Image 1 (cartoon, rainbow, N blue to C red):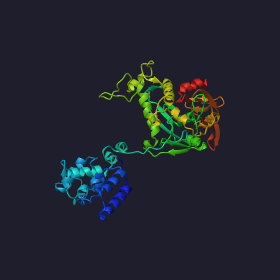
Image 2 (image 1 turned 90 degrees about the vertical axis):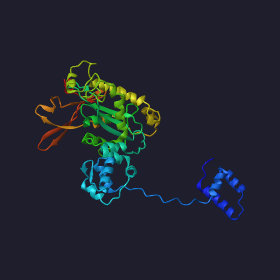
Image 3 (image 1 turned 135 degrees about the vertical axis):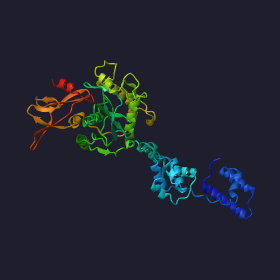
Image 4 (image 1 turned 120 degrees about the vertical axis):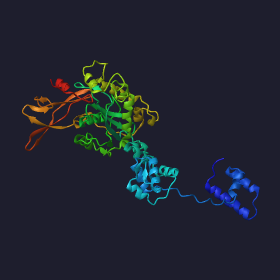
Length: 450
């Protein structure tokens, strides 16, 4: 038997009630209505029964006062402490747990009536959201954990990017120096969750952002089907994303930069989720992972430690005895990124891979040629021309002031743009050296220059 709509029930009751008033109502009429509406005869007779007497008035529930809310904040979300303090004031004692109740709470509860403990607990449960209660206990982290977030609908492929920096919980050995934790810059497509571009560096700069963007913009059919100019890019408050070089590139391509408010990672949740996936699937399986379990003294379990002494010892450790070399980790990450885009089936993509989701989406794409991106994606820095040339850290270029820019798969040189500034002589805009999506070392730059 299905559910009868309110309109059909009202019409049947009105008809049967009129027959009853005319003293013409019979059991056959009730049986006919029951068969027609698919209900039992007993149900129809119940519809025709006189209404029951009105229920007694419901007792009004207790509403939290401003003093109650202030007390919850003062006692750091401890409802039991609020109950004790309120009872102490209403009983005339004025002390709770061996300490006097604060004056502002005593004044607020001076004329309050006693309330049962269960009633006050129920009032806090019904009057405050889980996020509010968690905020007074553990602060902003608790509020975020207890909040409810709406899910943003997926955009079409290539329409929206999400970019982010993350310092990886992994120790790697750079070409020179002690072991350190590198930074990863990622570009994720909002519609297909594809990892369009990435860059690994010792520290995040605008150059690493441009490197990841160039990988996401470049379309090479023989390498990958990805690569398109988006309409919107979501970024956080990182200064590297707000650099003038990044704004200049996005502005020249008519891309809207949506800079999100501070401390709102949920507003670019797809790239945040990808960062967690990278840590769970790849980083946690590599030697040098620093996010693993620790002993009572805080020392990391495992063959590779993260103490300062262990980081210094990693400089001279043989391969396999310590953290990965930076260039080797870059190759491992490149293999993982290729697997993620082509083989990893995503639950939020209905079991499809990012590549399948990209190819099944027929939305048109706006491409840009690689040659057009060649000089557009170079980060700029002003250098003063000295007597011996341009000083770049400890290197000096005297051969036509040509600086090197290394991108994945090829090495390129470019001449810096010159600009005259009154009173300061001639300044040059140069491009930093980027190697294989990682910042190149000084020694590597020196080998290239020689």
